[in-house]
Image (cartoon, rainbow over all chains, first blue to last red; front, side, top):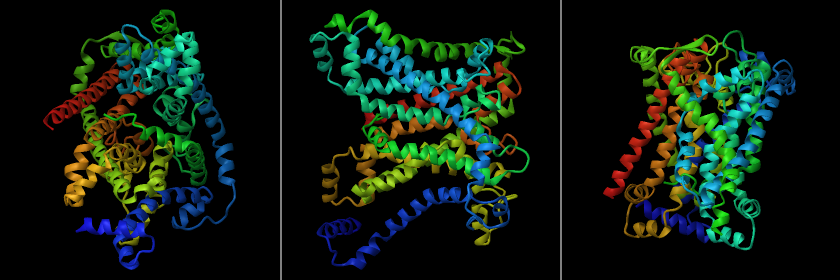
Length: 297
Length: 294
């Protein structure tokens, strides 16, 4: 029976003005309610966060959570950046993440090209070795790396983060880029070489432009992985001046002592809405890439 | 042509840098870490050989076993939650919203890209009890229920972590599973509909079997991530109260860096790695058997 109503509802909507508007509205009501609840679940915490970033300590402690801020100014943000050192954390994150991502994409895409397009013995084995890196937990490489960085006197700089981020980005980049290269007809590369292009020219002028969208998609996914990383950042940053935004945020609550709610909310806001802006900017690309089926069995 | 595509020097130049970085920073440390499991000490204090002592310690360590139990419980509950919520949403997108699902898909998807630390700190305040009463407790009081000290009890703290992680990730899993569902040919569903399959039996006997491969890879993906949970727990509960919400990852971290025991820390990391491996292989094998049966 529900199938019939479903088809009828569909027909009426296709016909434009539904003859039984009220009945249709009632039938669609459960779905609409469900959607409303869904939107509320996702959006209300964000709204509370945003409003909270303007509230005073007194607003937080003595007024109910749904009360509006008693004033709208940027005091909380100013104090998050001055006393909270938020700017320093963001700068550290940028310095560690972007060069690492750039290098990992460059050498990762080249490796994927070699593994998928070029012909040599041992390709399968090397690919599996890269794949293993996706599954092994970060905890497994942390301690030897710490020993090496310590012995090489790199602790106290951002180099440990940069190096580690580059390496842990490689498995996913290599794995996903080989699947994208696999989808490109081989004839294309063969034609290029027959036309006299050397292998580097084939890679740079034929291979890279063809998978450009894939590179952007994989780069974005990997960006969020290392930008949001806590484990590696908290392990290799031994002083506050080196902390990334994820580690630095933790300082805003501190295990003991009273929390300054306003600056805490302002700092979370900067982290959340900053990341959200990047996402909205590139969201269409990610969705398209994911829907294209990267992990289909 | 094969001279170009099989050029050894070119292969070395293209593949070499990535392979070198990957080998030095990931492969070598994995084996090195394995070597640590037979030693005791730290880079500061120096290492000495202890044989199998670390493994023996692990088997007699109630905190370690509690961490194993917590890790498995968290992974099973969260994977189930992620898949159920994600699959429900994906069905909603495909069968009810159809072309209009773009906006809601994006809205439910976005939390996955937010930094876990920021989300965890936000949820800490949403479930706060003192000194500030958070929204959840205020609402509970509104309907006549006494406020709850969410982070003061192991059970409630566990569920707050689960709720937060489902909030973060259900939209992501919905998109993954949605990709599998839209691949089901419209004709198959249409012909089942004409045969009079009611909606639920349509889902059970056609949609689920056809999306099974995607479902399995999603389960593997999910369980692999949830077994390695670290940020959510560290930022939300810090493993507390006590160590009751400490997964293996956090216990390993504390053992290594708070107590400076790299040997025992590596042993815990190895147990975690083996756990991930066993679970993945087990799911893959079940999948293969099901595939043959169908």
